[in-house]
Length: 452
Image 1 (cartoon, rainbow, N blue to C red):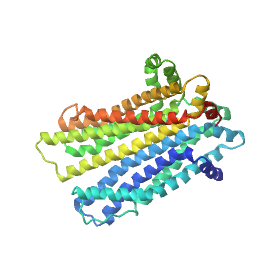
Image 2: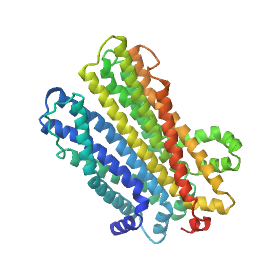
Image 3: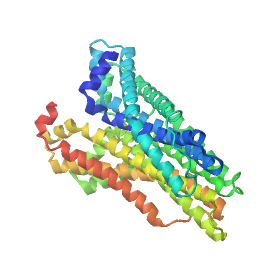
Image 4: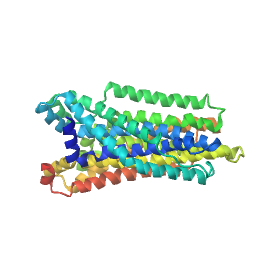
């Protein structure tokens, strides 16, 4: 089956692009921040500069690790669900569940190795650029030498490989156990039924986020800006918990908005609601990066605004340590924005392009190209509303306790324009990507799309 995995990768390269890109980006992020630890230990750094780089490597690298593992798992799960008919065909000709697992895991292993190899050079360049940023802001001495490799490369390789193969194994388990008829039915009506393990995982991450929020508001009350260490992580854990509940949340939002969408959209609205109900599982995969982007960007930006307001109210100038923290937060925001934005585009492209045959069938049944595009736009709008709503709730796990600690207020500092900007970017990325992919998918004749 490993040989079959290699042949599948060779002849269906386009179908694995989304999974490969998520692994490539993940490995790049991990190795970039891993190089900060290499440089801190082996590059001649000392004192505050060394501490800054070690902190950046551990904090940002740790957050990146969590996000990378989750993003890779989400992308591979979407990929396996899209191949349910192919897996059912293999079962019908005698493939066993064990052979199917070996094939899928083998594909993920090859993709992971290739992704890490391609990510080495970009990560080395990004790490050098990050060091130059720290030197230019006076946080690291200019005589520190950049070092890349001893920790960065093994960390990127091991974590990416384990995340990819582990995610592939988890993604294929349910499909491999199904009967042939069940696999085909699941591919056609992917309603995203949640397993008990997924629900338990969602509850666990939400409780971790709540625990850190409570710790921030109580134990960290007199710790000043050090409270960021717990407050910042709270929104990440909460966002992952919210994303894991994606299928349930999409169904709830659709139930509330279905009547409005159908009245406003007519036939297009009806088609959108039907597809939202039938494709909940696949849409939940696209929901994940929206939730992560909204939660972490909003939470971190308002947390930093609150910190700036607290220092101004106390009449204090920013110390070197506080400047380090602000730089760290901006680096986090930059990393999250780029990573989540690319993952959002990547996931939506994979999910929408895969639906070319479905769009062809709808057109043969009487739908026009305009109605198909309108359906995709309404689906994207509902998806955006759900993702921004969940991300906003997750961001409150960071914003509210930190505002309470630093300002003694339930309201954070910061302009509403910040939140509007985050929301607008989520809308543009979601609708722009979905509509762009759908336009390309409906250019071909309907008959040709159905027979592909």
